Image 1 (spheres, helix red, strand yellow):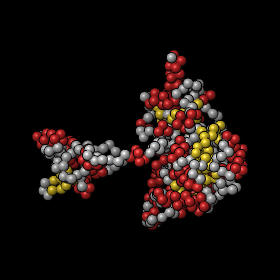
Image 2 (cartoon, rainbow, N blue to C red):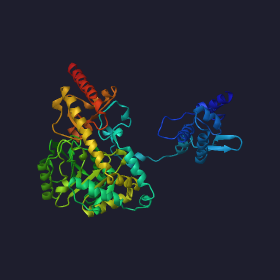
Image 3 (cartoon, rainbow, N blue to C red):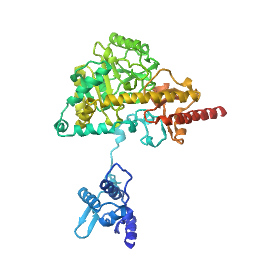
Image 4 (cartoon, rainbow, N blue to C red):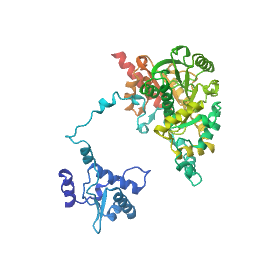
Length: 514
């Protein structure tokens, strides 16, 4: 006990050291990591945070093992790992001690930011910061909400984990080890390219060779590469974007120096006649417009392509959420109707499988793909080989198509339950008819402030996505909400909708009273 008191006093004065009690060590609740890892990380964090000081003696392995009810060998292996990392030192016949030169947050930060150092002004050097995800970003703690009406997050309870695990194991086995371990330079996994051409693109009516496909780190990376290439040739070129539209496309175009031309959308997609004549590139999400969910009609697709041919502009087609076309047969991709090679098609596996996969692709004229490949090489060379080969195995075995079919069935059911719940609450007029996908676009009554509603609903464990962040400039409609249903259990939808609608009524009644 006396040693423990000295130990605690030593934390204040930075001089006296002592023995660390086993009661000072806590294991994290992360059940996904092994006991040895959890113990090592717990001690590492305590040293880094300054709770354990240089020279402090760690508990005997037997005492710590008994305290946690774990194997003594587990404790010993954790201690040896800490020695290897330099946080702990071993002394013969004495035990294990916090190393004298163990890194800690206080000393490290102090060394980096000594008061007498003259530091450069990075604000001046870097200029105006680029836009961040901001209000459009899904909170990292979204799983803590009982009613997460967010788009793009997975329902992992429905994902075929065993099939994916088998594919990862297969991809990392001896048969494919060279394919994933070698430096592939600027090349992509040939097996994945074959699967994209044979399964993904043909399903969208697109005919392409593997040389016309580039694998990317998700659709966002493909959008960045495409915009960068086009703006390199024409700095400041006018990009027509959908309004409302995808915020991160808007942000990346601004960061690359494009001139933006927001174009309104209706229930058939982007309004072609509203595209300004000086436009050089048009960016569209024709399958399910982001964020309204509108599907571009065949007539509108023909009009857009005809105008692109007549006025010689390029089309970037982000085939957003196309897998979730369940209420009617999916429309063919714009790329499949393209006769002149002026459409750059972008697809992704991140939403249909899981966002953390970060795997997408683009297909375009071979000369465009080669430019994109060169640009990608300067930053990331290529996406990780293991990820590419595992995804290729997943597609090849038919797991991807089977998973997509199950998802469509599930999303169709959730869509119906969500629409019925909103109609039952008296807000049927707020919804457009006929749209499918994994989200609904809700246009609430005039006077509704969806940003304020989002904050009010957090206290009721409801998470929504206000539509304001999807608009460009002064056209913001603060009464709009994108209601995603890919992550919420079907059984909770009606109760969550009731809370949303009650929140709307409460806010509007407050406004009326004022």
